[in-house]
Image 1 (cartoon, rainbow, N blue to C red):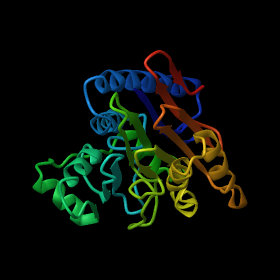
Image 2: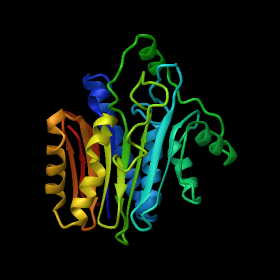
Image 3: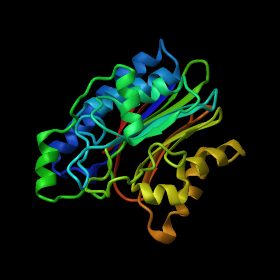
Length: 280
């Protein structure tokens, strides 16, 4: 069993030592809880569980604590993908839902598995998700001060369970001040993708990740026989011509975990059952 999570980029928030320590501690706690959960649950269930914990932590830009868009509203996106069935579900620009990743779970049951905007929010209400404001005072303060964050905040998880099944989940609160209707990479295969060979979740500037098809490229290359480290290296090299800003975490079917960013510093934590690694 293997588990790796990310919480966006450190530069998404302030760069003081206390914030760094808080994020390190939060990721360590979440990866520990999620690994314990993985011991008795599937990779798919665990990916959702880990991302829901990240969505609930105001340190990260997903769920509670999400960024505010140009019109003063919060719209979030999240996606889930199962490496066994190859099914992906997701919500794009959903509003006033505590855990967007949980709505993505419900969509797995339907033929129409990726919903956006008003339709996504309406579906959530029909499924019993109550109205919930994910705004926190810090985000409102940043919005009123016109302090953008360059869209570097996303959370994600890749899990490999005891049966060798892979799953990926990704969630974001957006980049802040974006145009209404803007779509991030998080609910696309560029930012959230897995099959039975490899799973990858991304963070960074969504437009750069989509242009590079980052998650899909890495997974495809591993599927074709390239070692995960080399697949990451080749894919990230293809970001360089336009100085693409991205970070990614991944696990292959053999349990090899890898993470990489094109700019410092993605925040992440991984656990293989023996050693917890946390960004520094």
